[in-house]
Length: 462
Image (cartoon, rainbow, N blue to C red; front, side):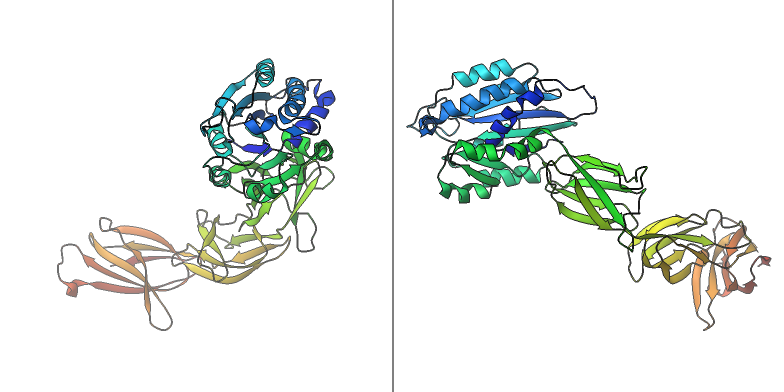
């Protein structure tokens, strides 16, 4: 899955000032995601304008070239360069003036620096088209973090819509909500860029410096977090359950963990990418969810969810005849089945009331079973009996449960090609209705009533 993130021009300065830290390579870890940074550089005519005593193009180069030089020391990192507005002069306006100048590869820092030195601003500003084409600049890969650093001094000058492109790619899970910082742009541009991402106007170099720590954390580092699964007293004691972090924008799963308490009894620390907002699903029964989780980069984040749980067990004392029995568990008065649980198995559920449908013959319904915090609720059903049915020939027959009201409820159809069947039945009154295959009139129907007691075995001959 591709995950792209726009990092503001301020990020260039932050990453640059971190060159001392990045100058020494870290020990390689094969499980560390590959970070791939695509620089999208504004080479339009307006970059020849003055900014704090220098031209914008010179100022951008002065920060970007040393940054590229320092980033080449990073493990698990590749870079590429796309430039727009540098091939065709205006007028006339050429909105296809965007090109991947240096593709992703190892050891290409010198190529990126050399290309930047010889860019001559000429043309227009096709931001939306550059972003749309950037989606193909990143090679396919699963364990990767794709980052875009966008450098611009103006808003869209062509017929493209950066906001629409951003939203479309976010929904596809290709890019994330961008950060955009303009180089000395008009403050009124805020409205134009806000819909495409978090826009920050940088009128001077000091403004860049104020954002350094935040941007480096977002661009290159991960962030820690813990998930507190709270019991009924608000304590983070619940654990040993799977949890999935989904990309909030694309709905694709990004992390899948089994929740753990560490040796001190606290929720374990997770390492998450702070460039993504998450939807968290904790796979309790039923699941608990928390949407739109935004992490604070560089800080330890605590994510809390109410997940008090208790246990449920179904038994039938004194019998081994229900070893394969299962039952359905639903929230009280809800139609959706939450779980199919085995007989005598202990399973955790969120606290509350549940309805059980036990797949006995006939089915047993138990309403409003209460699950309490850290308590095992044991539900007992009556010990069954056995009926052996001997039929006179192959034919068609059904078994009915007789209610006290006299109502008959069909619970089983006999096999038409069998003359003998054994059934495990709950205690109660029953009736068999049968007609031989060879008899083509209903008047030849045979009926027989019988009673089943717990632990008994009865033979019925028709």
